[in-house]
Image 1 (tube, helix red, strand yellow):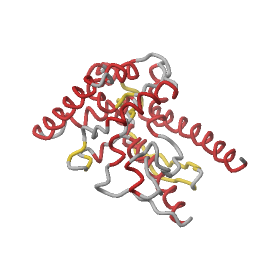
Image 2 (tube, rainbow, N blue to C red):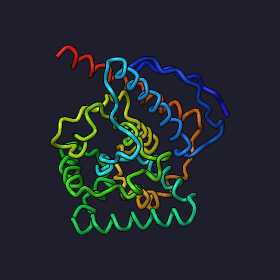
Image 3 (cartoon, one colour):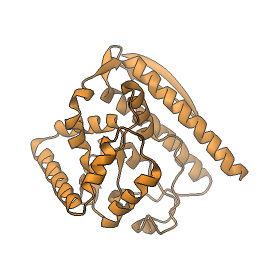
Image 4 (cartoon, rainbow, N blue to C red):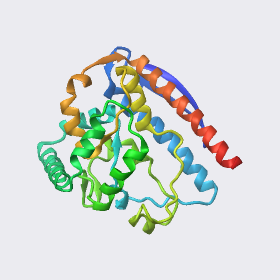
Length: 261
């Protein structure tokens, strides 16, 4: 292992931490936990800033209102989730796969599965204008996340970055309708799924992919050859940090413009 001291200036404060990265060649999945950790530490700075300003984060264990939204994953996250599910005890894995199968059947009946698959497999960037109708159609169905059990996340330690980043300071009851109610989300300094997607796009010379969570395991299985590729650990970390710095630069500019406006 090689230890790196990382320092990032975020809109909510300075993040400093030590990161251990394997010195040899590693698959992209090996850098996912470290990248998520940096995202969570940045999110914690946002929480601290909100608390200091007198706001309260409403999200609590057992509140799964946001678990009816369509969650996008980057390719590295899809591969990492597949690895995580593969090492689960057989009974838990079977239960999850049954939930995923039921969700797929429902989405096929509703005419959404093929549209989601097109998003996952497209070889070009997908514009928000294309995604919004799909997101709205999915949310209108209020389908519980297939990884949800008794309103609790069954893959909590491996959940996607997008799930980790969605925190609100508006009253929890407003989350029962995330489209029409005045939800106040906590600002996100850097979106880890987007960063991992950009890293993967650079490594594979392809546009960043968005893989809908209900089909992530299926997609990962179909692309398992890509998941076997390896790169030097320090090189992957450099790629991650480069994309983070770019993302943070854009976020600083965005918040500056909002403050001026």
